[in-house]
Length: 159
Image (tube, rainbow, N blue to C red; front, side, top):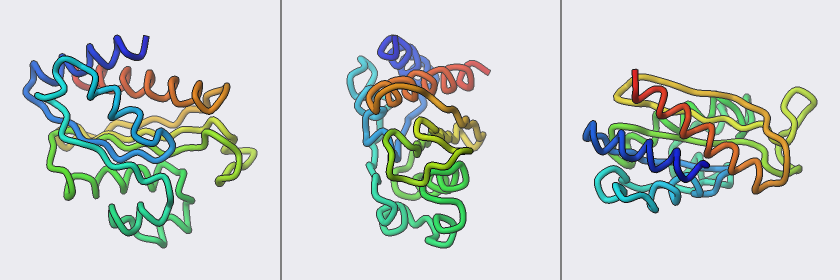
């Protein structure tokens, strides 16, 4: 299901002449990998950065350490900042970033349980995002996040 949505999303991007770049934490590059498997990958995919560790969000992307301390590495505020910083590293029309909690041991709380995922995209300067709580194994949560990210991108690209 997610693969078909990614294929469709990639096709829309190619038809519109748009390129995409990713910075992923919780999904560890899986979303970018899905785009690499599409027929249009050479036309749309610029690349991706996996910054699973919070320190890489700071050293590689330039996310202010104070922002991470204030909101946690798994937050919409950090995910948004990652998207804005990504554009400076990988020039593209679309920047997509992901953070979240796929397993225990992060910044989970009663308000932000394991399964909470944050996705943020900038599409030609327009912002789109979601925060969702998914259930299941780590792999299930990642699959659901990829599926939801594809839905969000398709909806935004069709506006």
